Image 1: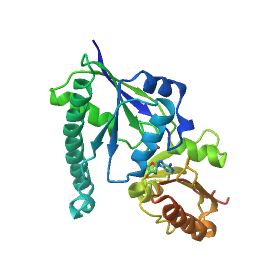
Image 2 (image 1 turned 45 degrees about the vertical axis):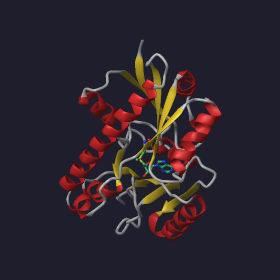
Image 3 (image 1 turned 90 degrees about the horizontal axis):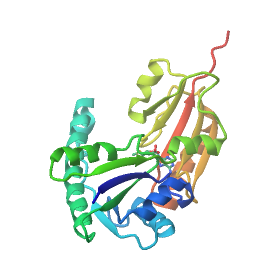
Image 4 (image 1 turned 60 degrees about the vertical axis):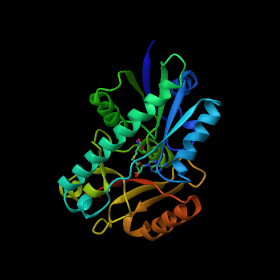
Length: 261
Ligand SMILES: C[S@@+](CC[C@H](N)C(=O)[O-])C[C@H]1O[C@@H](n2cnc3c(N)ncnc32)[C@H](O)[C@@H]1O
């Protein structure tokens, strides 16, 4: 009797973006856990649509996602932010432990695969792996686990714009909007930015940007060009995506202008 948790990368919202391996994992699971951040959570709805399409009838256990502290404590310093995230991961681990116990308790012989549907790829700006490690560290549950990769927002961005994220032989830095300034100061040439709450691109007028919002959905938006030229269009597209979909997630590549010799 094996208990296994499978972290299944599901791409960025469209049911066609799952790999065959991911689809097979959903079909073979006895239950799926879906985290729900709020009532009418559109990302939870996207997960339900994926299950409906690829593994109709799969039992779903919803887990209410604990709120993250967004008070001044979380934004004042990097250490403050990291503490808040640690507390949040602990709260999630507790919630998932209870949900996993319930999933296996209802599974007849108490075993089987439980699928956790992870947005994009679990390797990029996602806490699922860390939370599963914490659930195991709590010691109340014992299970095997594995990770099935998905299509990340950064891959989808590159595909939609038909670009390579870096020039020949050059590195890319993938970072958060919070750390973009540090990347620019450190001399990064190609910066992929995730987790932006808005776009603060002052001083980057001559950089090239390839931007995408709500990629993989029917409300996808794309803008590319020199930052100063396209920023008004881009901000309007961002607002539009948010008002049409009710949510907006965006990702962009910034490329430093070539020095004139
Ligand atoms: C919590 S991170 C999750 C990233 C995910 N694990 C991945 O591999 O894409 C959320 C960030 O991913 C990016 N993102 C996720 N889905 C997106 C989408 N459909 N369109 C554009 N950006 C997206 C945004 O930068 C967003 O702030």
